[in-house]
Length: 220
Ligand SMILES: [Zn+2]
Ligand SMILES: [Zn+2]
Image (cartoon, protein in one colour):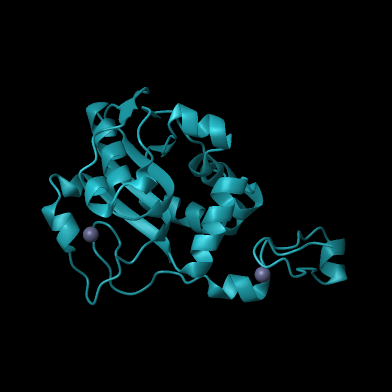
């Protein structure tokens, strides 16, 4: 029996659909309905939901903020938080399937020359054996290019929001991005520090422009 990856209730589908090769969904309908897509007015640069279409204060304050623009798909609510935690720390590739179609559509819209995963620091990758960003790219049927690597650093999650906004560069370019537009894919957009630092490293590699698609956007 197939079970929902979040609540573990059964997600069995009609036997006739299964007969025709339909795979049971990774989430039950109740869990799926708790994920909320972002719609309505948002910041033109970072996709933060706003009262009206504008540029948010964080983006206004950020140097060179127009070099990178972000699109986020879902609100980072409790359900999304549980889903992403499970995805990241347990390496359930099946969870990346939930977002595959949305990412594919957003990537088509972004129309960049190259797609690149946000890399993990070597020790983090060794510990997790899984880069969620690469999984999202792979399951969306896109081809990622290794354009960036990441130095070892203190755990981002242990820092305060203010510290993260002022983070030192941890990414460096390893591939040829000269003259290209690059699409970064990642799971969560919080302060945007990670995406901006990755974009800076791509700019250093000569990238023409950078866009990002993040599955979830925290509201703060
Ligand atoms: Zn469920
Ligand atoms: Zn913004």
